[in-house]
Image (cartoon, rainbow, N blue to C red; front, side, top):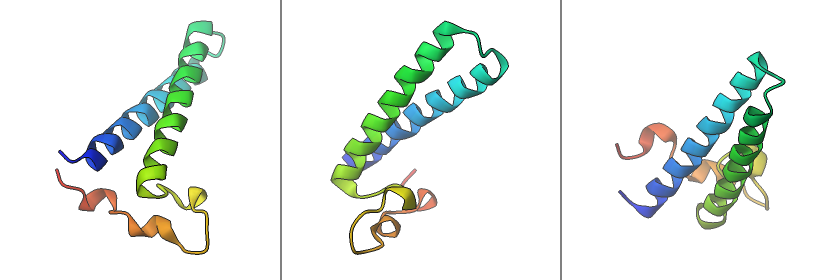
Length: 82
């Protein structure tokens, strides 16, 4: 697996952890451990996303900066090697 693919897996894993914690908190909003886990997962996802984008470009249109529409230059998820 290439470095880019490894880094993308880390971003996807961190995003998944954050989304799962979010869903749990929707059902149990007073769980302080879950809230702490959510914040940790969110921070990790943000860090890994920024790290990925600094090396390979934006992952979403929201993070596109500059004079070109760069985010579409990356391979689409279905074009990545399996």
